[in-house]
Length: 118
Image: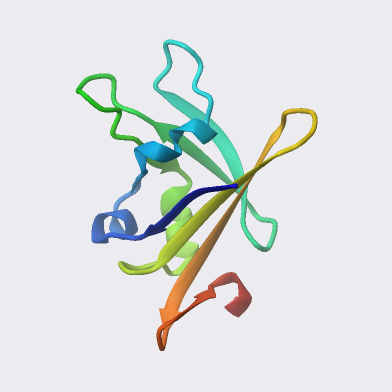
């Protein structure tokens, strides 16, 4: 299932966190009383990225963001404003969730995977 499909903003690409869509929070069961959950996402080359989804404790809506090794991922993939990140999740029969992350760039009107070029 696709958890997130987001075109990066300037702050997503430059800062150490990605503004995360609130509608995607259901893919990350957060323990009661906690405002964050850590997970591992595999890229197309099976490299593991340790990421963390956090929400704020105050305010009318959760305003989630993605942190952890996000900045390292951006740097290694050479991501910039306008590039796209897709996060998917598959649930195994035993209940384990497997997350995958993919980055894409647009070239002549078509999106292509950055991992295919590395």
